[in-house]
Image (cartoon, rainbow, N blue to C red):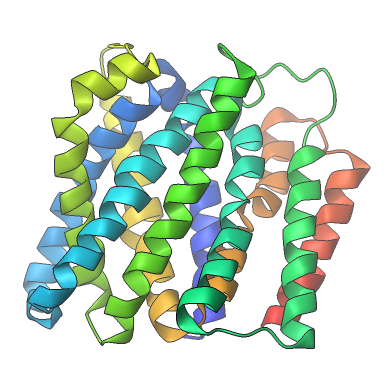
Amino acid sequence: MPYQLAALIAASLWATSSIIATDVVRRIGGPRFTRVRMVVVCVLLGTIVTIRSGWETLAVDDLWLVGLSGLVGLTIGDIALFTAMSRIGPRRTSVLFTANAPMAAIGGVWLFGETFDLVSGTGAVLTVVGILLAVVYGNRAGASDTFEKIEGSLPIGAFWGLMGAVGQAAGALAAKPVLDDGADTLAVAATRAIIATVAMWIVALPSDSQLGATRRGRITPRDWVIIVVSGTIAMVIGQSLVLYALGEGDAGITTILSSTTPVLLLPALWVITRKPPALGAWIGAGLSVLGTSLLI
C-alpha cells in the first residue's frame, strides 16, 4: 500500500472516531476516556502481535525510542487532545491539532534530511492552509450543539490542543528511526501503547486534579461499545497505518496527510448537525484536495 494512502485512510478513521466518541468524552472526561480506551487498545494490539510473533522484530536498543514515542505521543498527546475536545469540542481542537503537521515536517527536514521539491512543497502548503480554513469556517456562527459547545476556559482548552499537537508530532518523529530499522509496525504500536498506558494510570490522580478532569460518571454498556469501536478504528488500525506510513515514507508528508481529518469531518458533521459548513470551509476543503493530489 502506498504510504500516502495509508496516511489518508488513518485520517478518515480518526474523523469517524472523533464523531462517535464526542458525547462519551464530554460526559466522563478526556483523560479518563483516554486511559480506559488505551487498556482496550493494549489488549487488542498485544493479542495480534503475539499471534503474529512480531515482538522479536523489536531491538532492545530501540525500546527507549519506542517508549519516548509512546510517552510524548500518547500519554501527553492523547490526554491533552481529549482534554481539549472535552472543553472546546472537536472542531476547535482540530484546528489546533493541525499545528502538528508543520511541526513534524520541520522535524523531518532537520532530523532525517527529508526534502520537499517544488511540487510537494506547494502541495504541503495548500493542504495545511486548506485544513486551517476548513476548521476555522467549519461551522456557522451561533452553533451550540455538542460539537461546538465550550465548557470552561477557551484559552485553557486551546493550550491543551496545542500541547496535543506537540506531543503527536514529537511522538511520530521518535518512532520513525525504529520503523526505518525494520521493526514490525504492529509491534511498535503495541509497545508504545503499553508504555503509554502504564504511564497514564500512574499519573491518573494527579493529572486529573491538575486538568480539572474530575468527572466520574458511570460508564454504561453503550459507552463500552463506543470505547471499543473508537479504540479499534482510531488506535489499532489508524495509528498502525500512520506508523506504517512513517516507516515507508517521509515523516512530514505522512503527518500532513494524516492531519486532513478536519476536512473529512465536514460532510459528516453536515449530516449529523444538519447545518452546512460555511463557504470558507468548502474553499479550504478544495485547497486540501488539490494539495493532497500534489503530495500523492
